[in-house]
Length: 163
Image 1 (tube, rainbow, N blue to C red):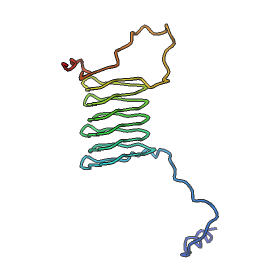
Image 2: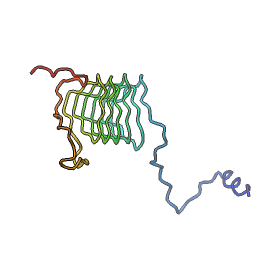
Image 3: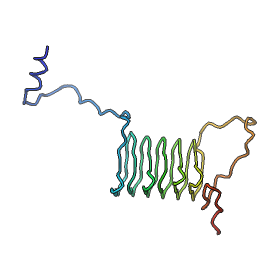
Image 4: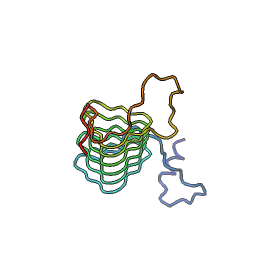
């Protein structure tokens, strides 16, 4: 029973295979790719999994989920399923779910399906809902619409910058 496996492993000659090589798993392993605080990357990042940025990235980021750490800086566009922002982003953010912590600072538009903003977060740009996102049926909501433009206003109630 073990001899067959042992013989296969001991063979040093390459074996030609008629089968195609297996594809890499694109599933989420649960462990994010980490850009540490002392790392600076210039270029675009693309991942089917999770990315955590604690350093500096100059380029676009496309991933399933993204966490921008408190001391992190990103200069570029972000496109993810879910993003948690604790640091600084200079560029547009497009995600189904966006969570902004109190230390977050975004200079650019945010396009979202779901948005949560903690008191103290800073946004300079427009906030728009994703096209085709599900909305309540007419007449079912008592909440009046909120203006979607936030020009230099902090989420904690700061006043817009003077023109």
